[in-house]
Image (tube, rainbow, N blue to C red; front, side, top):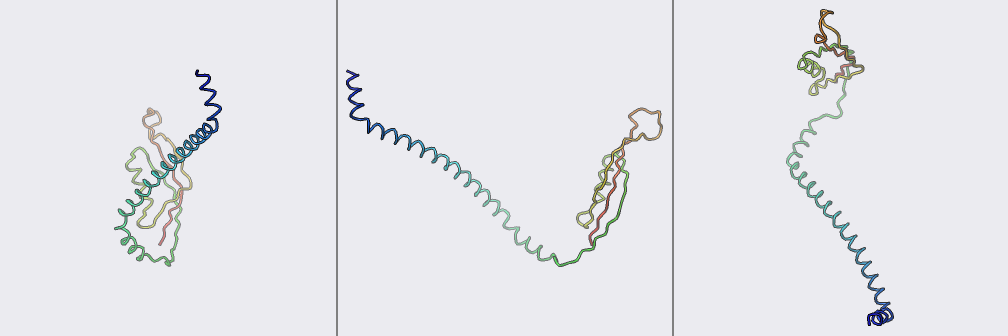
Length: 149
């Protein structure tokens, strides 16, 4: 009985079954692209919201920035002085060494230190017969201090 039914379905509804399979395939492809574009839309919407939020938080600072930019004279001529320097920095006291390095440049006064050569040396200080704990590391810096006026 099932054989007869199966053969009758094959002969009578073969064309409709093909259309059904094509329809299911097209629906699957459309669903795939819909999900893909939906994800892309959600990411773009989130990026837009973040950008809008950042703009509105920075908006009160824009007039202040404009007023500060108007104070700057872009046509001003700068004079550049270059001073050759050579330094030995003792690294046994790190806070003092960092303070010496910070003092070489001053952003607010337009003074910059440009390093040309840097050498590290672990020299022994004082008594040659003392243990290895008496090593006094030194940093040799050679460069230029550039001053803009």
